Length: 428
Image (cartoon, rainbow, N blue to C red; front, top):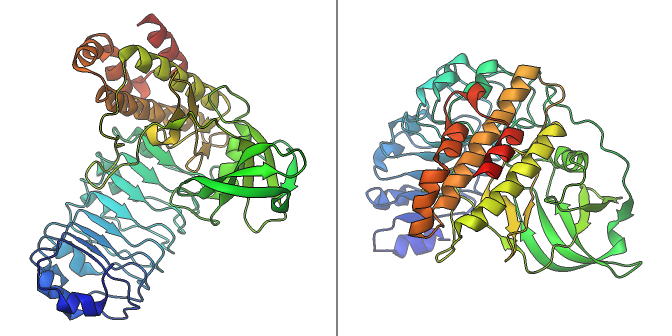
């Protein structure tokens, strides 16, 4: 993180600048780095516009304007020749004009704004792979968006949609879709569950943190049992709405590959869940996507897997996904970074922040929505393939190619369901 003073004294070229200094105007001193800066993070300022010559940043790839005061997307961004990622999360956007972003854009974050509509020419952004628009006032999508055929991840939770177009569920590469907390996708009220106060628990170490909340190890006062306690951060996340997340998780019911819920929190400003404590022998299977991988997980160096282990893991993933779909829930975030595994390849699927209740959607859309997750499973298999030793990777290509091709085929309606995949994996 730089200050204006340290930037003024910097003589060397910079490729990345983070600057949060209560800025109300764009500092002209930044132009000294216009030929070198690739990542510019001006989050947490009070900016409301960009200068007309901002396109002088010819190498700029990623621009973060999170938590500022923008009510419109500055049209000058369309002139930035290298820009592939933009974040306006947590602004006051009401105006998204036609032609205001560059056509080569791949990653767009507009979470937590006040947009009521998208531009009719949205389809011009054909290279988009990842779009986050949870927490706006959208009620429709422009038909031109059908041209965004590279789109892999889309977040539309917590908007005003009363219905969705059929074509949304037929986008050929879409694999991670979240539609919760819209009038079109009400979550059935979850079954009654034990409720405790936060004061009934002693919070111990932090176990992890995701988009929607923080998970602690905690001790229950009454019987001293150690549990995992998830406290939600707010009423809106990059994926959706914590209240829906909690109800979807409760509606998922018991399954060996889901962490069992013991209670929910009461008397709190924000919802929270108490779950069984997963043994310390479990670890997160993957890391979230990087700037470069965009929609695909990353893995630690040296991480490996045998083909026999992969088959065991794949069978568990397919089984828990078939269970969720039977419960009329799509997970929306089927990734290795949302899975915990141990040395014997026992697996837990977590993080329901992007989950959507299917019940109220038309049958055809329900079917296609489930098929999107089959594509996500195909991507997960491809990611797992990178962890195999050479001999196993060759055998994977021979034996698993048919399953992989079925999961990744572009025609959504032709993909198998997870129940069918269970039989296919069993036969391998």
